[in-house]
Image 1 (spheres, rainbow, N blue to C red):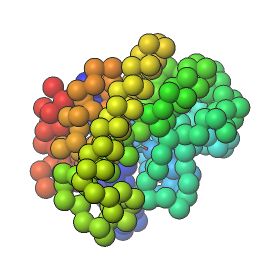
Image 2: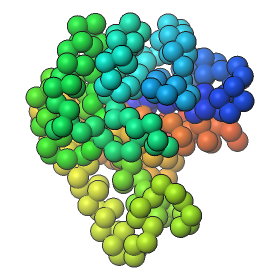
Image 3: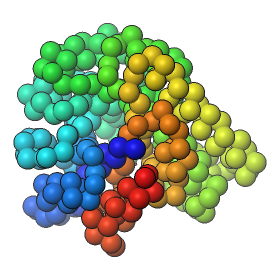
Image 4: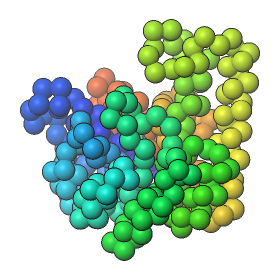
Length: 259
Ligand code: PXP
């Protein structure tokens, strides 16, 4: 299983003080030495964590491939074409959100996404679409001729957290908090079923399948057991653990679970 380490949250910490420390660039050799397979960053339109200069330097200096998440906005696509990461992952973006909530709405943005993909491909950047795990989204992704899809695991992760991690009802981003355990278990089974079915169809259609969002040291095993999924992009849980153990240990711990 390939691991993309999302280092946005190192920049989140820096932005808390608006100084130069910690610098996400310092994570690059540690990620490489710890066995990460890819660096993932999200250049958000509001530049709340990773800035243009970070992206430029990370792409220039990383010895690992860089997967740059970005919106489908025209200006952003131009910037990404100039930056030339190894891969661009197109994600929906809403400025008010705490983090990416849900996958791309390909149905209502088909032409815009198609144009963005064509521009990225013309610049020799491979493209991934961050999508909800539904048959419709997989088929639309295939029509768009991308190399990769990344299945959104946020819903799965939220339900898992409610069932097994004792999350309390004050957690602001989780809608499923009021449900009974039986309903939550059914929802978890259903969400895993949807992810498996989608991964399966993706592979049948010749797409490479990644997954990510909300994955952590507890829930990741259920996703990593799905053989069609060949890459996971994980940020929050790895950077959170690194505060206590250091980044090297946090990444090697995750790699060990995925081995
Ligand atoms: N994949 C995508 C497309 C994302 O937008 C994010 C969050 O930036 C991640 C993976 C990583 O999610 P998390 O930080 O919850 O591990």
